[in-house]
Figure 1 (cartoon, rainbow, N blue to C red):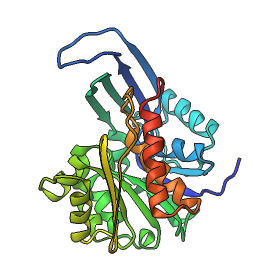
Figure 2: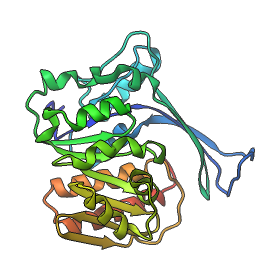
Figure 3: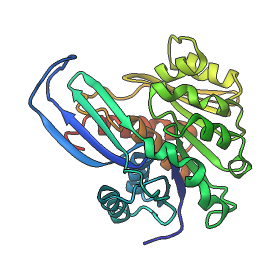
Length: 291
């Protein structure tokens, strides 16, 4: 296995427990369906997608020393992730995420990332030694604490990296405000997350991306479900409407989009082609039948 990473993926690596019903669901419904358990978390989802594009990700995260953690670590290594730098806290359980989905989308979800949060900056220790001087790609997710994200936003170890950031969920979007002034940060958000981040509403992704740049962000990529997504950087504004597909799964769609965009750019695609590639890859993902 290649032990030289192409990208560092920092954030949640946990077990996803996803329950899916094939028809529409509402609050309080009790329906038959399928329940799957598989490696997940924002950082892990991005890493898996990047690995499928031929990239080698290194994981910086916290995984417990319990049996679930041992199993998860083996699964990561078997998929080709570099796991040498993972923090394994003593006495903390491996994190988990649980979601219920219907044909009409995500019904409810709970992310239990307490071990990652309690580990704090211990997950960044490799950047002081084995990964010291890293200036390449970094995928960062918003499951980290406000304190740690704020620390990273001003940390000189990240100032020269190609930093790509995902909020993890709308409820955590506001944690990313310190990165609005980061010199190299690309922020991947949906319309709801952009609105929460800037405490306002937007008519479309173009307006949201432009507003994020207006607040000092280096580069913004805003998605809007089945509607057009927009990429804003410098004086440039690109918009692309995704293919129309039947949505069969939701969890991991944003991570797939981000990974496809990163991989396309890493392979030399121009901004417009990279955006189109990300939208097409996400359409393929959400219209698939299985996780």
